[in-house]
Amino acid sequence: MNITGSILKNLRIKKNITLEQLATEINEKFDINLTRSMLSKWETSKVAPVYDHLKRLASYYGVTTDFLLGFDQDKYSTIAQSNKDLKLDKKRIRNTKKFFIRENINNLLKDDSFTDKDLIFIQDFIVFLKSKKNK
Image (cartoon, rainbow, N blue to C red; front, side, top):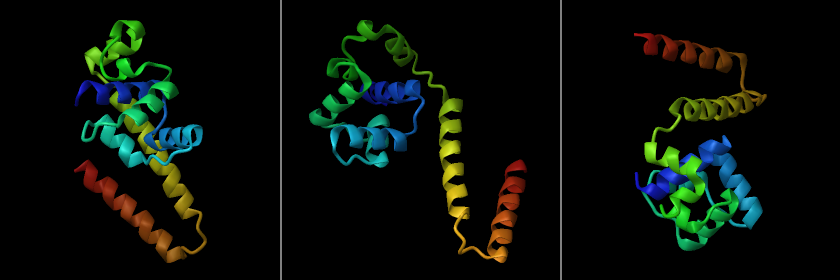
């Protein structure tokens, strides 16, 4: 992971938001169409954001583009320190992601098109996955 990716990830984690929430907020604020997938690719350094997107991210987080690129680290010492350590709070990331997934599953299950048989199958599948995980 390069420095820009880790900085972007740390900034998002400090705001305690998911990639989906970040995409929604940036799209609304700047009237663009970024996807969760694109933000994820930037954070994992699979792809680097173009300068226009970098400017928007800097504006959104209240930092400079130089900071996002790894310069001016002393200006934002609390964020810079977590970037130096690169010890991300992985449990918090997982919990945020789990919450988002559970919310999506709950919304799917609210659909009245599921029969009782379908719901029992889903329940049995979840029990099966849990038992498999415990082995």
